[in-house]
Amino acid sequence: MKKERVIVGLSGGVDSSIAAHLLIAQGYDVIGLFMKNWHDTSVTLSDECPWLEDSNDAMLVAEKLGIPYQTVDLSREYKERIVDYMFDEYAAGRTPNPDVLCNREIKFDVFLKIALSLGADYVATGHYCQKDTLQTQEGQTLYRLISGADGNKDQSYFLCQLTQEQLSKTLFPIGHLEKSAVRAMARELGLVTAEKKDSQGLCFIGKVSLPDFLQQQLQPKNGNIIEIPQTYYKDSEEEVDLPAQSQQIRYQFSDGKIVGTHQGAHFFTIGQRKGLAVGGTPDPLFVIDTDVEENIVYVGQGKNHTGLLRKALKVNIQDVHWVRDDLKIPDGETLEVMARIRYRQPLQKATIYPRVDAFYVLFEAPQSAITSGQFVAWYQEEELLGSGVIA
Image 1 (tube, rainbow, N blue to C red):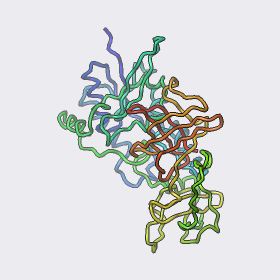
Image 2: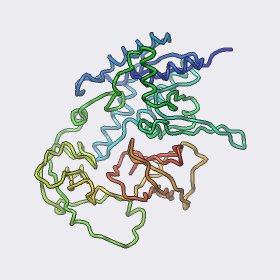
Image 3: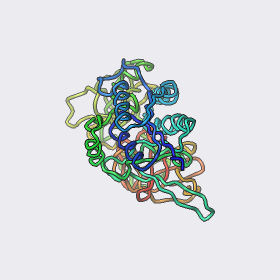
Image 4: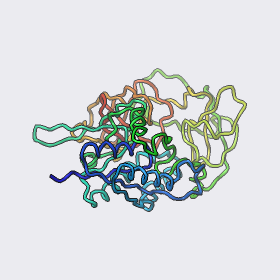
């Protein structure tokens, strides 16, 4: 009987190395494929994660495991789908999440299609997440996206935009393991990636200076940093409707005082503390809003500043994604979930409210630095049900 073929996205890291090893042990016909998605070293902070070194490590792992190895250049697709999108979002004053986009647009779309064209039955990655299946009464197979067993490394959030079709062709061989077990296995096998640090920075680009990266297209432009005092806010005991609760407060120049200058509002994001270069305040300053049209950065003192906190967020209808369509709830109904607005944030109790014109997530406790352009993902128990781009 012919073996099922799996093409593993070998990244040059320990996780994908062990993913390939486990698939070989399970009897699959395994091929390693390295994705070259970026080779502009002019904006990297260091040579900590250059693609050449990663490609070499991936090749050494493939040799050690005795599997075929190829490199595919996806830099054009990566620029068009990820980098250009990032520039557009930052220019508009939003903060995109390139890792979520990279999985949706590159790994599980472009890469998946290439793998299938090479005769693969599945693709596999070194993500710390899991999937399982269930059968409907009509005999249809549904795929569930499940959190990784290692709570510290769970990467289901980064896969929150995957579809049933993509999940049907994907394997996550290390999702049931702890990171320590993965490293131990790599040491035992004598893999060059065993002690290699996890990559940091933008998906596939590595550790970069974001302002330097953005300045390739977004020009520096001097503007004012305005501090909004805590006294700006008035306590209200009135019940506020969802649309109002989900809106970011918009400030005026006259609402605060000038405390510094910056090189461009589009280089800053809500919740940011570093890079303001303003001292002399009793508590650290945090970005609470940016106005890219007026080129103003608004800040507040302390991580509990009211301007950082919000109980609800909005997702535009066209940006709502359900991993399982059978779990969609109609306008007027509600669903209690656990949700997160960033990777590694502990899950928060929330209720989702689909409406005809928008989709709202109301949290039990106020959330810090809800940021337009980022993704909210919602879960029940260990299963990720859906996600959306925060408006």
